[in-house]
Each structure stands twice: as C-alpha cells, then as structure tokens.
Length: 199
Image (tube, rainbow, N blue to C red; front, side):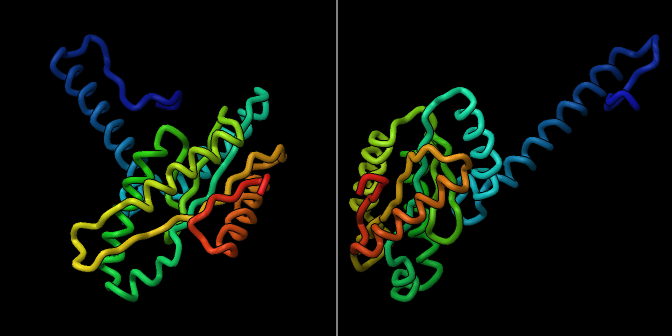
C-alpha cells in the first residue's frame, strides 16, 4: 500500500476473491475516468471546456516547439449573440448555442477544440500551417452561417468571427493574445470575417 498499490491479497488466496478485487478496482478506475471526463466537459453544450483546452494546449504548444513543429491557434466568437437571448429568451439562446457548439465540435474535434466562455471557442492546430488554419476556419465560418434552427418559428441566421494566428512566439498566451487582436479587428470590420496575421 505504501508503494502505491490499491489493494493486496495474502497467499494463498481464494480465486473468487481475487477476481472480485480486480473487478472492483477496474470499476474504480472507470469511475475516476468518468469524473475526469465530466470535469473537462462544458455543462451547457457537452463539448470540451476551457480547463480542458488550457490543460492540453499548454503541453501541446511546448511539445510542438521542442520538436520544431508549426502551431497555430484560433479564437472563434458568435457575432451579436446577445440579440438572440433578447429576441427569443435565454432558454432558446441556450438551445441555439448548443446547436452551434455541436457543429463546431464536429468540424474541429480532430484538433484541440473547446468552449471558452459565453459564445467564444478556442482551437489549437499542431502541424497545420497558418494559411491552412485560416482557410479551414473560414470553412467553419461558412458552416455556421448556413445553419438552420428548426425549433424557431422565426428564421435566424448567425455569423461567426474568428482571429487566427501562427506567430512564432514563446508562449501559448502570447499566441492567443495575437488571436484576440485579430478577432477584435474582424469584429471592428463588421463581423462574419476571419482575420489572421497577414490581414
């Protein structure tokens, strides 16, 4: 036990007891994994959350730097989402957000992707060039623009703005700060745009 074991049996042991103890320990490991997974899930949308992103992204960023692999990031934000809540109410706004989050997750879950807060999302792309990242995020922007919401009586069209950066910086925070600057410029330009370091 002091050495890190979860359990022990004295010899000679009963076979049935042996299998019971193994089974209980496996169930415990499964329960721990479920708790860990739940802590990394966004309560509203069910996709990965901010804590998951930063826990994984910092290590992925450092690892990519050590290996000399290119890394880029994107911050995505639904334009004028507050008007959805004002127009339809918060419950409907939550449903709309879940639809958008599910689509984003489907498009980006092969990368490191998570909901940040509110209607903001983060993505990290290891091994994808800056230009390819921008191109891909613009494709995602178009997916969101074409979404329909069957549970609404009145039509709704939502747009997405994004800031992409692939700058060769020393930290993940610096990379995300660059994304923040780019998305601010996209918003200032009217939204429904993807701005990167070259804009």
